[in-house]
Figure (cartoon, rainbow, N blue to C red):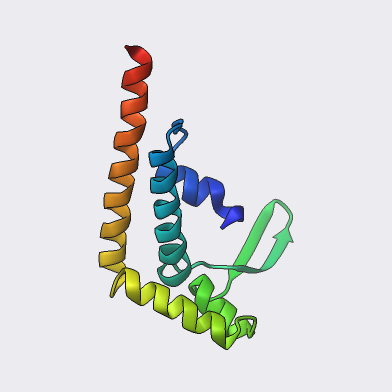
Length: 123
C-alpha cells in the first residue's frame, strides 16, 4: 500500500492535519479498512509489455486481478497468512459493499475530527 499513497490514501483522506489521539485511532481504523478493501476487492491491471514505435507507445496489460489473488497465484502467501486475512475480511464485512459502507462511515468520523481542529484553530 505504500506505493499507492497518492492514488489510495491521499485520495481518501486528503491532506488535512490531524493532531488528536482520537484522530490517530480513527485514522488507524480507516487504514485497516482501506487495506482490506484495496487488497481483497480492487482489481489492478499490471503492465506486462510496452512497445515503442516512433512516438507511439503501445502498452499491454494482464487481466485485472486483486492484489490478494495475484499474491496467491504467485505462491508468496503462506497458509497461515491466508487464514488470517480471510478471518480479518470475514470479521469486518461479509462483502465489498458492506466493507465500503464501513469505510465511508469511518472516513466521515475522521473528517469530523479534522473540521473540529480547523474550527478550534480559527477560534
